[in-house]
Length: 85
Image (tube, rainbow, N blue to C red; front, side, top):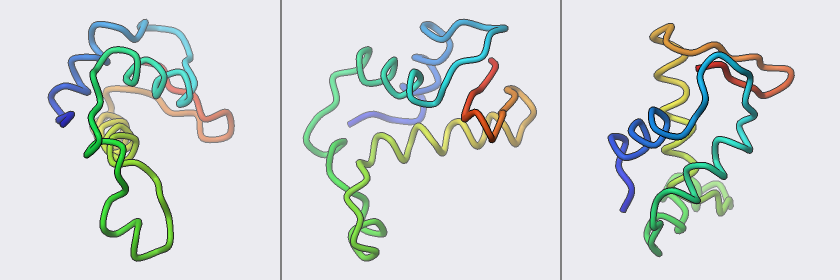
């Protein structure tokens, strides 16, 4: 099971700084650098209640991005769905 700490370590080790990177590329980087298990791929209970199947690991990545953005540690460009670390 991937943790927030794992995600932040992947960001630090594998995401280039100073250049825009899409959220899709970020998700690919996380997926390619951590052995995600069945639990990670399963949807959150809140997602199931809404009829969605969005995987837990993607929700955790989005939460980590949101926290970094809120703390002013990364920039987010909403229209292009890109981030600068």
